[in-house]
Length: 403
Ligand code: PMP
Image (cartoon, rainbow, N blue to C red; front, top):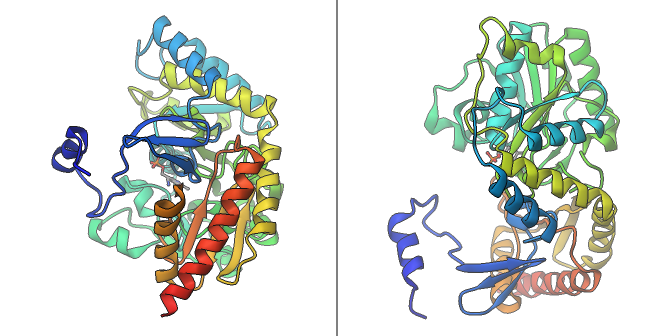
């Protein structure tokens, strides 16, 4: 088929991040489906990489965006004016978090949330050493990249932050790496890009205890696992381990760009004083994004979508018992299918898209994992039918790869 003018412009003028972008031309999206220019409908099983929890174009979120855009958009840099969408969202969200996380600082994206968290930890503790984890992913700006645990992505940009100590995730030895010189430990309670790897309960408790002993801060990056994806509002609730700083983004904005970090007023003091205004952002907490986020949060809670995440996990574990799927990992609707080899993985993802119109995900750090992150609103019949097709596709592609 001939390329459309838009597709042509995409390849000529939109800076690319790889030589082989998916290049699907999406003209509209609704619920669990993406609609392409040629009229084909794609079942979205990755939700814009764990963003579109409510599916696409949820009417309440769309209405909130339209109404707020008509009322006002940007009026002042973050932190100066009282803007109702921001205040409402901060109040709503903190009411759902432990008492120690009673303030939110709003930013625009995940990496910015981590950037702010690292700076906050340095200034609050007066230390500059970080403990981070192999295969952890925290974003691509220089601070977040400094604590991202994959050498191939970090090396081309070195020198980065100097004092980052990388440990194995879930390794008891990591606990000893936390010392009185450590400003903060940063980790994902369920590693996303690293291959959907949940932290072990006892290990996470031990990390928390050691942070308390050494008076360093514990940062949980829940940018991917937050907002209901794992069956609770945040994944830390499964563990009963509360961080000092919680970073969030992705699904937070209901499809609009928004990020944030939650902590205590005592810790956030570091951003207010000596000197004042030492961490500012122009667009952080954009009123339209905050209005969308509050609407999305209300829908998430009212419609019982977090419970749906648990049903999705159970259904996936029941259906995906194929020969070629080695393991189904993860929590709720943040799932990874461990495949025996990279070729079967690649072929299965392509087969699902081309033969069945099912869009599956990949991860940045693993080439033998298929990532599933369907919207939580997905209809149970569609979920089951799609999972059966995925299971059979992996079996077929495994046989093909072995030839
Ligand atoms: N942390 C985690 C755990 C993530 O999954 C991501 C995005 N994949 C980020 C941080 C970075 O978020 P953003 O792309 O919004 O900067």
